[in-house]
Length: 254
Image (cartoon, rainbow, N blue to C red):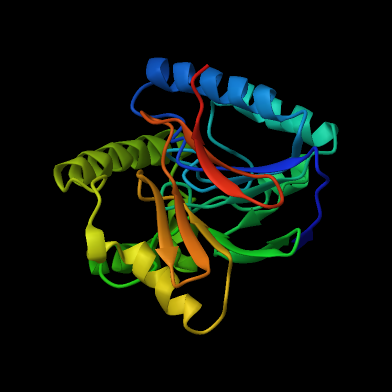
């Protein structure tokens, strides 16, 4: 994918909104802040990359999608109507996104990292779950969750029951991760950083842009590359901005 932007345009990146968590009240407050951010950037946005775990849970049945998030969905629909390209990536909480956003809004949905070139700067962009060494338990779970037969069987559960079960699982998963202190810097054990280093040995990218870790990071990858983690919007409200020459992590405070 190639994107060319003018001197007055920027490309924006954000991940881990976790809309729906931990409850309706706090999710709605966060949703309003996300909309203010989108309103703040849309005049200069050449494109927006939403890099996974946008929803704390999402499962597309053949005729049903999860209830809620209508203000957020309405805002990105309005941005698409203005001609602003938006790109969605699935994360470990919204693995089951399919073609609803593509058919309704013209927003492509990616399930794996993709290569993007913006003004001759090469980027590898993805959510980041299941990449790099370690985290073997999750990698096994991901194979189950992405298995076509498992998805086929799950969709026959009534949505009221299936979504309720999934929301409970999502909440318990988040509590487990907090107990493991997954949002603390692991130094040389940062497995996404290691993944970027292994990729850079084979093919060069100027920027590696991921989410999932819930920790804003800017780390060197070799001498000419940088790994950025976008952080999250439950507490930190961080995002990435690229002006055609420079990538930077920023915090939205409005």
